[in-house]
Image (cartoon, rainbow, N blue to C red):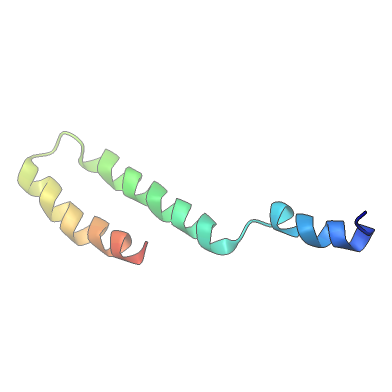
Length: 61
């Protein structure tokens, strides 16, 4: 049987999500925001925005 302090250690990751996955989720959300902004724009403009704004974030991820 686990001692109380062992349970707390095991459950700590559930209580406090790691920062890295949270940051990745936020970056992905930013990608969706950019795509929403350029939806319906001409192809050349979408390409330019993707190269300027999306690619740096994708590289970070």
